[in-house]
Length: 256
Ligand SMILES: [Zn+2]
Image (cartoon, rainbow, N blue to C red; front, side, top):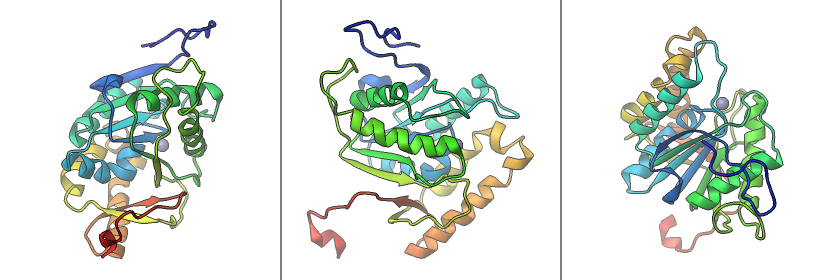
Protein backbone atom coordinates (compact mmCIF):
# COMPACT_ATOMS: atom_id res chain seq x y z
CA UNK A 1 0.00 0.00 0.00
CA UNK A 2 1.39 3.33 -1.03
CA UNK A 3 -0.36 6.28 0.51
CA UNK A 4 1.09 8.79 -1.86
CA UNK A 5 3.20 9.36 -4.89
CA UNK A 6 6.75 8.02 -4.41
CA UNK A 7 8.11 9.99 -7.31
CA UNK A 8 8.41 13.14 -5.25
CA UNK A 9 7.01 15.34 -7.99
CA UNK A 10 6.84 19.02 -7.03
CA UNK A 11 4.04 19.57 -4.59
CA UNK A 12 3.31 15.90 -4.11
CA UNK A 13 3.63 14.29 -0.69
CA UNK A 14 6.52 11.86 -0.11
CA UNK A 15 6.07 8.13 -0.28
CA UNK A 16 4.93 6.23 2.77
CA UNK A 17 5.74 2.61 1.97
CA UNK A 18 3.45 0.57 4.16
CA UNK A 19 3.73 -3.17 3.95
CA UNK A 20 1.07 -4.17 6.45
CA UNK A 21 -1.48 -2.36 8.54
CA UNK A 22 -3.46 -3.63 11.51
CA UNK A 23 -6.30 -1.99 13.39
CA UNK A 24 -7.82 1.42 12.89
CA UNK A 25 -5.11 2.77 10.60
CA UNK A 26 -3.48 6.15 10.45
CA UNK A 27 -6.52 8.36 10.76
CA UNK A 28 -6.99 7.96 14.50
CA UNK A 29 -4.35 9.40 16.90
CA UNK A 30 -2.74 7.24 19.58
CA UNK A 31 -1.52 8.18 23.05
CA UNK A 32 1.62 6.06 22.83
CA UNK A 33 3.63 4.86 19.83
CA UNK A 34 6.35 2.22 20.12
CA UNK A 35 8.76 1.99 17.17
CA UNK A 36 10.64 -1.26 16.62
CA UNK A 37 13.13 -2.27 13.94
CA UNK A 38 11.44 -5.65 13.49
CA UNK A 39 8.07 -7.13 14.38
CA UNK A 40 8.64 -8.70 17.87
CA UNK A 41 11.11 -6.08 19.20
CA UNK A 42 8.37 -4.05 20.88
CA UNK A 43 6.74 -7.16 22.34
CA UNK A 44 10.06 -8.42 23.74
CA UNK A 45 11.07 -5.10 25.24
CA UNK A 46 7.83 -3.45 26.35
CA UNK A 47 4.98 -5.86 25.67
CA UNK A 48 3.91 -5.61 29.30
CA UNK A 49 4.10 -1.82 29.29
CA UNK A 50 1.97 -1.68 26.14
CA UNK A 51 -0.63 -3.92 27.78
CA UNK A 52 -0.51 -1.78 30.93
CA UNK A 53 -1.20 1.39 28.92
CA UNK A 54 -4.11 -0.31 27.17
CA UNK A 55 -5.52 -1.55 30.48
CA UNK A 56 -5.61 2.05 31.69
CA UNK A 57 -7.59 3.17 28.68
CA UNK A 58 -4.75 4.66 26.66
CA UNK A 59 -4.47 3.96 22.96
CA UNK A 60 -1.23 2.42 21.74
CA UNK A 61 0.25 2.01 18.29
CA UNK A 62 3.21 -0.09 17.16
CA UNK A 63 5.33 0.91 14.20
CA UNK A 64 7.64 -1.75 12.76
CA UNK A 65 10.25 -0.23 10.49
CA UNK A 66 10.80 -3.48 8.56
CA UNK A 67 8.96 -6.77 8.16
CA UNK A 68 11.86 -8.59 9.83
CA UNK A 69 12.39 -10.99 6.94
CA UNK A 70 14.24 -13.05 5.92
CA UNK A 71 14.63 -15.32 8.95
CA UNK A 72 15.25 -19.11 8.91
CA UNK A 73 11.61 -20.11 9.50
CA UNK A 74 9.71 -16.96 8.62
CA UNK A 75 8.08 -15.49 5.56
CA UNK A 76 6.58 -12.03 5.08
CA UNK A 77 3.08 -13.52 5.19
CA UNK A 78 3.74 -15.56 8.31
CA UNK A 79 5.45 -12.66 10.05
CA UNK A 80 2.53 -10.38 9.24
CA UNK A 81 0.03 -12.86 10.68
CA UNK A 82 2.16 -13.28 13.82
CA UNK A 83 2.53 -9.53 14.33
CA UNK A 84 -1.19 -8.97 13.89
CA UNK A 85 -1.95 -11.71 16.41
CA UNK A 86 0.52 -10.17 18.90
CA UNK A 87 -1.12 -6.77 18.38
CA UNK A 88 -4.52 -8.29 19.06
CA UNK A 89 -3.27 -9.95 22.27
CA UNK A 90 -1.77 -6.68 23.53
CA UNK A 91 -4.85 -4.68 22.53
CA UNK A 92 -3.06 -2.12 20.38
CA UNK A 93 -5.17 0.21 18.29
CA UNK A 94 -2.94 0.39 15.24
CA UNK A 95 0.09 -1.45 13.95
CA UNK A 96 1.96 -0.24 10.88
CA UNK A 97 4.77 -2.19 9.24
CA UNK A 98 6.89 -0.11 6.91
CA UNK A 99 8.79 -1.57 3.97
CA UNK A 100 12.22 -0.30 5.01
CA UNK A 101 15.03 -2.83 4.39
CA UNK A 102 15.57 -5.48 7.06
CA UNK A 103 19.26 -6.20 7.82
CA UNK A 104 20.15 -3.02 5.96
CA UNK A 105 18.20 -0.45 7.93
CA UNK A 106 19.80 2.98 7.83
CA UNK A 107 18.98 6.39 9.17
CA UNK A 108 18.13 7.85 5.76
CA UNK A 109 16.18 10.91 4.74
CA UNK A 110 13.54 8.69 3.11
CA UNK A 111 13.26 6.61 6.29
CA UNK A 112 13.00 9.72 8.47
CA UNK A 113 10.32 11.11 6.21
CA UNK A 114 8.30 7.88 6.31
CA UNK A 115 8.47 7.61 10.11
CA UNK A 116 7.86 11.34 10.62
CA UNK A 117 4.79 11.05 8.41
CA UNK A 118 3.43 8.33 10.68
CA UNK A 119 4.19 10.52 13.73
CA UNK A 120 2.34 13.48 12.19
CA UNK A 121 -0.68 11.30 11.50
CA UNK A 122 -0.80 9.33 14.76
CA UNK A 123 0.39 12.25 16.96
CA UNK A 124 1.45 10.19 20.00
CA UNK A 125 2.15 11.96 23.31
CA UNK A 126 4.85 9.44 24.16
CA UNK A 127 7.32 7.79 21.82
CA UNK A 128 9.06 4.54 22.76
CA UNK A 129 12.13 3.71 20.67
CA UNK A 130 15.14 1.40 20.66
CA UNK A 131 17.93 2.05 23.15
CA UNK A 132 20.85 3.35 21.11
CA UNK A 133 23.46 0.81 22.25
CA UNK A 134 23.02 -2.53 20.54
CA UNK A 135 24.93 -5.19 18.64
CA UNK A 136 22.25 -5.40 15.95
CA UNK A 137 22.93 -2.67 13.37
CA UNK A 138 19.21 -2.45 12.56
CA UNK A 139 18.48 -1.60 16.21
CA UNK A 140 21.16 1.09 16.30
CA UNK A 141 19.81 2.51 13.05
CA UNK A 142 16.23 2.30 14.34
CA UNK A 143 17.18 4.32 17.41
CA UNK A 144 18.82 7.06 15.34
CA UNK A 145 16.08 6.98 12.73
CA UNK A 146 13.34 7.33 15.36
CA UNK A 147 15.10 10.28 17.00
CA UNK A 148 15.61 11.99 13.66
CA UNK A 149 12.02 11.35 12.63
CA UNK A 150 10.82 12.87 15.89
CA UNK A 151 12.59 16.07 14.87
CA UNK A 152 11.47 15.84 11.22
CA UNK A 153 7.88 15.59 12.44
CA UNK A 154 7.84 19.25 13.38
CA UNK A 155 9.20 20.56 10.07
CA UNK A 156 7.13 23.12 8.24
CA UNK A 157 6.97 23.77 4.50
CA UNK A 158 7.32 20.08 3.74
CA UNK A 159 5.25 17.73 1.64
CA UNK A 160 4.81 15.26 4.52
CA UNK A 161 1.18 14.49 5.34
CA UNK A 162 -0.46 15.83 8.48
CA UNK A 163 0.33 18.92 10.50
CA UNK A 164 3.81 19.62 11.98
CA UNK A 165 4.17 17.73 15.24
CA UNK A 166 6.93 17.16 17.78
CA UNK A 167 6.27 14.18 20.05
CA UNK A 168 6.65 15.81 23.47
CA UNK A 169 8.23 12.87 25.27
CA UNK A 170 10.49 9.98 24.28
CA UNK A 171 11.78 6.99 26.22
CA UNK A 172 13.95 4.11 25.03
CA UNK A 173 13.28 0.39 25.48
CA UNK A 174 15.79 -2.40 25.79
CA UNK A 175 15.67 -5.01 23.02
CA UNK A 176 19.41 -5.30 22.75
CA UNK A 177 21.63 -8.09 21.50
CA UNK A 178 24.44 -6.80 23.69
CA UNK A 179 24.97 -8.51 27.01
CA UNK A 180 24.77 -5.42 29.12
CA UNK A 181 23.03 -4.02 32.12
CA UNK A 182 21.08 -1.20 30.54
CA UNK A 183 21.22 2.04 32.53
CA UNK A 184 17.49 2.09 33.18
CA UNK A 185 15.99 5.41 34.24
CA UNK A 186 12.75 3.81 35.34
CA UNK A 187 11.03 0.45 35.29
CA UNK A 188 7.35 -0.22 34.69
CA UNK A 189 5.59 -2.75 36.89
CA UNK A 190 4.07 -5.19 34.40
CA UNK A 191 3.37 -8.01 36.86
CA UNK A 192 -0.35 -8.02 36.08
CA UNK A 193 0.28 -8.37 32.35
CA UNK A 194 3.34 -10.57 31.99
CA UNK A 195 1.82 -14.07 31.90
CA UNK A 196 -1.45 -13.26 30.16
CA UNK A 197 -0.40 -10.57 27.70
CA UNK A 198 3.35 -10.23 27.20
CA UNK A 199 4.29 -13.90 27.08
CA UNK A 200 1.46 -14.88 24.68
CA UNK A 201 2.30 -11.88 22.47
CA UNK A 202 5.93 -12.98 22.26
CA UNK A 203 4.92 -16.60 21.71
CA UNK A 204 2.67 -15.49 18.84
CA UNK A 205 5.92 -15.27 16.86
CA UNK A 206 6.13 -19.03 16.43
CA UNK A 207 8.54 -18.63 13.49
CA UNK A 208 10.99 -16.90 15.83
CA UNK A 209 10.46 -18.49 19.25
CA UNK A 210 8.63 -21.76 18.53
CA UNK A 211 10.10 -23.75 15.66
CA UNK A 212 13.44 -21.99 15.78
CA UNK A 213 15.77 -23.89 18.12
CA UNK A 214 17.87 -20.80 18.76
CA UNK A 215 14.83 -18.74 19.67
CA UNK A 216 13.16 -21.21 22.02
CA UNK A 217 15.16 -20.01 25.02
CA UNK A 218 14.13 -16.38 24.51
CA UNK A 219 10.87 -16.34 26.52
CA UNK A 220 12.64 -17.83 29.54
CA UNK A 221 15.53 -15.36 29.27
CA UNK A 222 12.98 -12.59 29.01
CA UNK A 223 11.29 -13.83 32.16
CA UNK A 224 14.61 -13.75 34.00
CA UNK A 225 15.35 -10.21 32.84
CA UNK A 226 11.92 -8.87 33.73
CA UNK A 227 12.03 -10.66 37.09
CA UNK A 228 15.36 -8.96 37.74
CA UNK A 229 14.03 -5.47 37.06
CA UNK A 230 10.89 -6.37 39.00
CA UNK A 231 13.05 -7.33 41.96
CA UNK A 232 14.84 -3.97 41.78
CA UNK A 233 11.56 -2.08 42.15
CA UNK A 234 9.82 -4.52 44.47
CA UNK A 235 7.39 -6.29 42.18
CA UNK A 236 7.33 -9.55 40.23
CA UNK A 237 7.95 -8.33 36.67
CA UNK A 238 9.12 -4.97 35.35
CA UNK A 239 10.37 -3.59 32.05
CA UNK A 240 13.25 -1.07 31.98
CA UNK A 241 13.07 2.23 30.11
CA UNK A 242 15.82 4.76 29.52
CA UNK A 243 15.39 8.53 29.40
CA UNK A 244 17.68 10.79 27.42
CA UNK A 245 15.90 14.00 28.34
CA UNK A 246 15.27 15.38 31.80
CA UNK A 247 11.87 14.41 33.15
CA UNK A 248 9.89 17.21 34.74
CA UNK A 249 7.67 16.83 37.76
CA UNK A 250 4.65 19.15 37.78
CA UNK A 251 3.18 17.77 40.98
CA UNK A 252 5.84 16.73 43.54
CA UNK A 253 3.21 14.95 45.59
CA UNK A 254 3.38 12.24 42.91
CA UNK A 255 6.84 11.45 44.28
CA UNK A 256 5.54 10.76 47.79
ZN1 LIG B 1 15.02 -6.68 16.25
